[in-house]
Image (cartoon, rainbow, N blue to C red):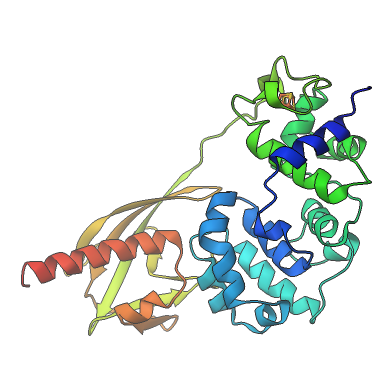
Length: 328
Ligand code: SF4
């Protein structure tokens, strides 16, 4: 019988696919959408174990998410990072006005839903015959067709070429699974791959695609100062585009150290476009800034903080615990 990559993929998926993932057991576009957004930049295991179920428990429907406060959504997103995803989810839920779009074409008009995500949701929820093109699928296509050049437009053409429009759900899920478990970025398992007979890149998978020239990220140094007054601490809710909506301590490029400033420690936080190297101080200096509000330690637990501010907070707690133990 003539080899068919699509047929081989479906047979492989039947036997090896991750069929029990909860977002694969529903046709409701809302949880599928939530999973797709969470899975951008985050591994399946992490999403499954820590974020997917609590988020859906807190916001069980499109309406519940639309009616929620942004603060609450950010709080549930804490730890997933890339908070723009959470803000877009919230805005998009409001834009839906109670009904999630039925076609990929209409989904793309919502914030945070790109072409591949729209195709994924539409094919999973409505069986719309459209291929996806996430990072894993890109890697498979580069290798299968031996494409060195990174060219998104060209990849879409190849995505349609390999696609099986008769089985959009199974095909797209199977491609995700082959990318995640077989055609690995490092040391792909070609011997067990359903594409092996026709894959043009299997002899030298590392050659496809060509390597990106990596530029080292700039390091941004800053002074994070935790101002204290009557056992309350000053935080402001960020209004800038970066980390918008999250609460944080005072952060400055450089500010002279005050006589009551107490060094707590250094933190490092890697962001996609820079690395933050922060020096954290606890300060009892007088502080007036109307953008800041004062919170107790218990109240801070309820706020959504960036990872850097969580690290600063951990240093503060450690310091206060030490003081308590020392009887100060
Ligand atoms: S044969 Fe190897 S390189 Fe080709 S798609 Fe499969 S795992 Fe990837």
